[in-house]
Image (cartoon, rainbow, N blue to C red; front, side, top):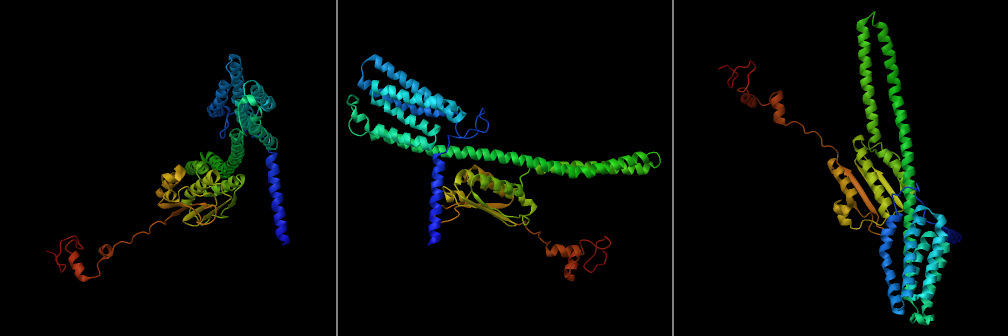
Length: 454
């Protein structure tokens, strides 16, 4: 009982800590290079193209404005305020959210709120539709601890203020205004969390790529030193010896120089093999990279400690399997755990994520399995293997995803036919020997059944 209470207390503490971290979470993280376009997420121009379409809902304010006023002055004023608000929303908000112009955050938010405050008493309650866009800006630019109370306050104003102002000609609580504010804010909180995870994962990938490149540079430098150090030393010694023997023993000098040429060719081949190995996919390096990528994505990994039982001819193919399986799990599955198992002829990648959208289509690794799985299936088929994909489990809330590749062992050599062997080494049956003798005699002459020349 005490242990259960302790676990419950620990769970409560963990939940409270997660909630506290979320409430105090700053605005969206900026790309690694603030002045350069980000490879993931949103940028100002994408925001303007997408958000500009949704400004069509400001038409509610325009229709309400024409319904309440006939004077040109009020209409012109209303259009001017709506234009200024749209400019702030399309220009200022993305600069702050996606380009790090934090110094504009307070002025832009205050100016958007001022546009709404100036519009409502002059033009009418239709301007409350602008609070939906203000809610989006608050979610993107402020910490949840600040934006959440402001969103709730805006929803309360949208619900109960219009019925208290008679000339706005509204009756009853306006849930049709506050509902979209809350829904859009909730949606933006989810999008913001996804964008944050995407940016942080991109940063982790860049850091892993940088570290991997540094490790590969060190490996290449070490391998080249090991390969060329001994070879160049031997070449130098033999070349000096040949120069000394050139006058006294030309034949010995020629032999030494021939060995120098052979060493040079071998060293060149070793360098080419090292560079080729640097470019190829390897099961060992992919497992090491997978461990780092999964750790960065918050996915616990269960990876094999050794791949000695995997033949060298299959390690590159199995490396592609690991890369594809890990990539799918990180990008699409929402998994918390991933396991890789290998043996001499097969490899399996299993996660506990959401599973395939269509297990039957994925099982064939065809069009339903995605371009990555289709390309992997082609590689496996070229190696004489088969690809199996589908749900990892039929029970539990998360079916998971299973990717398994099996490569059949090479076919054994077919032994020569018995009659062919006998024809080669001589038949055991004398009758058969008699049948063969007319074809070829021992001395090359044609012979009869008894072996006598004709």
